[in-house]
Image 1 (cartoon, rainbow, N blue to C red):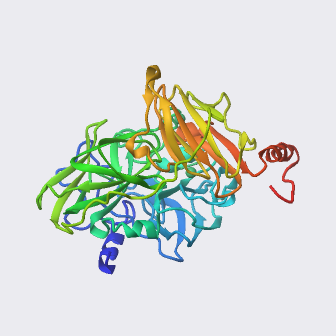
Image 2: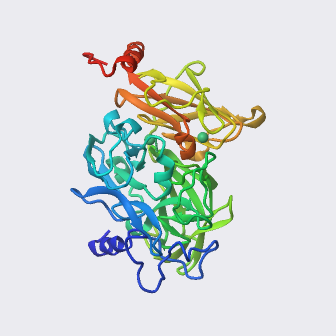
Image 3: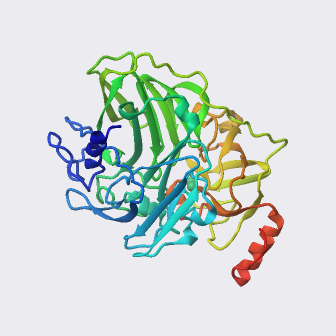
Length: 477
Ligand code: C2O
Ligand code: CU
Ligand code: CU
């Protein structure tokens, strides 16, 4: 990306903060239609957070005077890029009227940098997040994780991307710059309480209009050729079912590249899941319009205008990455039943209770069971996992979907589904979270604290004592 283009991008970094360029009228809550505009607004690309820039959460005012929350004044917030081996460093300020935290979803941060609810940042306060990046390239993201208030803060606009880069990915020479789009999908409500106005709904908040990078029904441009679409479902509760008339290959997901490209017709993407896609526009001509659709709602989410040909000889690589398959003998080590809207295994989240401890470095098999209230996008902090088998309705086999290959941190549990995963925590020891990423479910108690420890028995004993007496000092974990 050239400097001049980067500048232009920064000018349209998100709604609320900057006016859209001249020929397009600004999209505000008032004129957001339930169906696409005749003239679609251009797709905004969030600007990059520069080295040394601070990240500030605060209120933003939309074009029509309605309020939302943004990072650095934009919805979505700035994109953070970091390379494997580098130190991730963000100075964060909370200018919201409520306590918050920033969780780096997908980054393997030490527990104290993970933005968990107990590490709340008061209004007016801030903190320095800093840790080493020792993980594969991939699309990650950041969002608030305050105790009991994640749904409302995220709904009001707080989210942004964290892109991790590495040499393995660079060697593939994947489409970039004008041939790459980073997309945050979500929904918003324009009928009733206003665009980002939040109303408590224990079943999960769903809107009536899809947003891409903060705007409804945008128009993007991609060269004729093969493009890379990297997508986050940043919605509170909505599952998107994506389809396109151009051929699509899945090349990656939450944990980075998968082993090889897999052609798909449609993709179900639950909240917090990410996708890395190649979109084959070679069969189209300059000026053609190609629609990205949500098949579940029949929403023409975004239109792509095909531009001049670019790199016509670039071919899709046959191999993408080597994924070490985790090995495990026998049945599940743990089972988690996600019940209704608020419980796992019968109990609700207690911020002061450690629910279980996991041995550091050992592969376990976990079973997630849906007991009503689905979909439950189940998310694990502190490690990545591999989706293996499961069962669907009436005992049918649930095979991993093409976009569930490789490494994941969130898996979509549908009604009457059971999903088994293999997981190995080998990045950090300490306290992490397991929860449903339908944010209303998370806030209402569908969450557990667990500890990763070399000695899980001792870790549980220590946690029980600390619950009674407060923090104790042991020489090791
Ligand atoms: Cu994306 Cu615990 O969250
Ligand atoms: Cu997370
Ligand atoms: Cu749930």
